[in-house]
Amino acid sequence: MEKRVFNFSAGPSMLPVEVLEQAQRELVCYPSSGMSVMEMSHRSKMFESILAKAKADLKELMHIPDNYKILFLQGGGSTQFAMVPLNLMNKNNKADYVITGQWAKKAAEEAKKYGKVNVVASSAETTFDRIPQLDSSKFDPDADYFYITLNNTVYGTRWTELPDTGNVTLVGDMSSSILSEEIDVTKFGLLYAGAQKNLGPAGVTVVIIREDLLGNAMDFTPTMLRYDIHAENDSLYNTPPTYGIYFMGLVFDWVKRQGGVAAIQKINEHKASLLYDFLDASSLFKGTVVPKDRSLMNAPFILPTDELNAKFIKEADALGFVNLKGHRTVGGMRASIYNAMPVEGVEKLVAFMKKFELENK
Ligand code: PMP
Image (cartoon, rainbow, N blue to C red; front, side):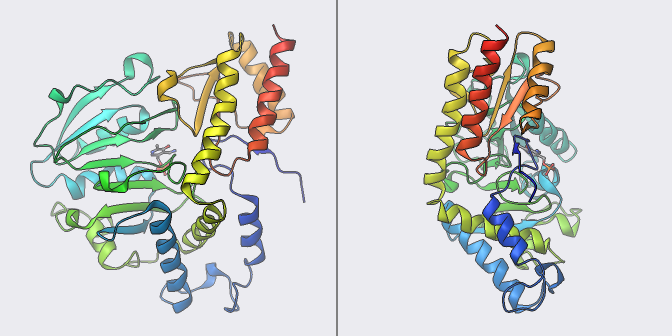
């Protein structure tokens, strides 16, 4: 086999090797079926059991209560930007949004097509280097929901404390942090995540929705964008992304073998602190995020000049540390260290950063 690199991509991103190998073993013949999962009818008993197990495992891993539905949909996180307002902006036709980066911004822009968006706070002024301070007097008590992006993939920030929204339903985009740290699902009416970071290949979107929020979509909502339709049909209203669901199921098993989300969180905290401790001690590299809001998953950092940034990325790439280029709005570098990035990958990256610092002082 060709040598694998340490892939620091923001997504799609690294997947656990043992999961890839299991999928490889089962690619042509899924056990006791004589066919690939890709070739199975989504209405077959075999696929139904794959789907049921994936759902049960996610429920167990995230401690999802019985009054929530788990949906496996298509359309990525971006389709949720529309589905959330179409399905939930249904009483007063307005919602609160906190703008912590470009994904929250896009979600708010989409929501504006369907109702009134109240921007409660934004950290745009400081290039989203922090979670903005909230002033609860700006919260609209009549909002149909309150929307946050739990982990901001581009800017490397994360919410460590959830806003107290009272009776207003909290909605969270957890595309880049699902299964990376423990979270209290009961604080949310709806959570969603695209699969392509911590869960599996792109193409599946997980939605976790409290049952009482179902059934009030706007009249003109396309059938495929209605949560109630997908919930009533157990994610089998139409042909779901069968292979992605199967693969996600393998990742859920892997997370369980690591000891579950709490154990993974410990490893993630360790990986993140290896990087952040180095950045804090370095006289050449600099983290771009306010320390208290630093993400466990995406760590952006910069060097003093564009030339040095480019040199670092080039040398890192040659050594097998790939996809470290930062987002164009931040510049510099971003190391995405999702669940499947081994500790060894971060240790080796930090050792290389130390060497680079000595050579370029
Ligand atoms: N939300 C977040 C936090 C993201 O990081 C992304 C994409 N990386 C999206 C939403 C959009 O997801 P998709 O590309 O699946 O539409």
